Image 1 (cartoon, rainbow, N blue to C red):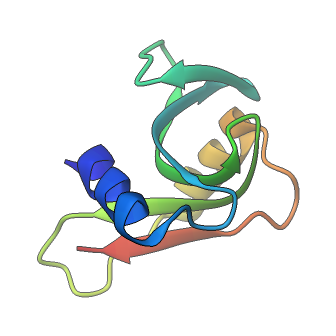
Image 2 (image 1 turned 135 degrees about the horizontal axis):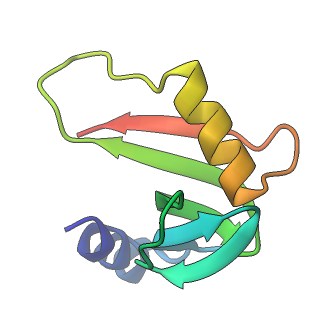
Length: 95
């Protein structure tokens, strides 16, 4: 569903920033590709910019919780496994 929403949005309004890519997997600072599952990997809901050097990340939360967040340990896991540059924003989007 996420991929379809992003594709639909970009077809209607054009690419956001450097374009959005959905369901990208990373491990040990290395991009693995779309929807790859390996022990210890992280899968990012949506990234902006190049998949090998994202400029922003978006984490979709499908929940009734009105204020979903990412724990500090989850943020560190994402930063480490995706090999993010310092200051790359991770934005939680409540749907």
